[in-house]
Image (cartoon, rainbow, N blue to C red; front, top):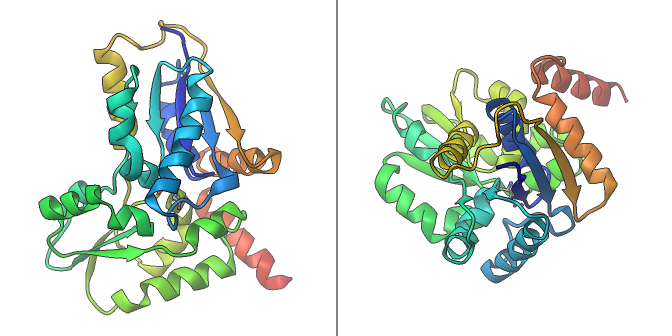
Length: 271
Ligand code: DGL
């Protein structure tokens, strides 16, 4: 079936999921819609997150998508159940990867960095009951705003992360869960701040689930189809440019994200 797959996020973060999707499903076409004009979602009341998400989904449904991937932990927690109950197409969502991270525990804590909404909605409480032993939720307040401003690798971000994580650095940390798709772009800074601590995210697992569902429902693109992606934003072309730049920063063929980040920080310091 050669219709596109829709992907949504509050903003640019979801392109980190798109990156994995393009690798795992190279024959599929993806329509990515970032709601940059209304980001961040994570500090908004539930009803606003739901209304924003519904608008994004409408946009993609009008383009004939065959499946929807919610590349946003916050929107999934707030609205995936309702979407699954009402849409005729498969809906794949995300959750902080606490389950795989909990298997890395060896006496220390598992930090779960996510948005305020993700950490306070019902879905996360259920996850904590199942896998939350020694898990410590940490609200990533202010991170999404900086990523949206193109400052994923900046002195400001370095200082913000140090401040957010400082209260937790005295205990042994066995893993850090990146529970928001925007946080994938912080890996180089986090690796410096928490050397040797595994950073766990749900991107690959989510895309594998998408592939499984497409396969089970006979929705995979015919063999030999030309895959690709289209980026769209409620915030205008500067955001689609930022998405493109962030997408490329994850490609191992370009200078490593770590080098690019070190470079960006060096340039800032010499300003
Ligand atoms: N990428 C969204 C997530 O995964 C960011 C949420 C926000 O906009 O605050 O949760």
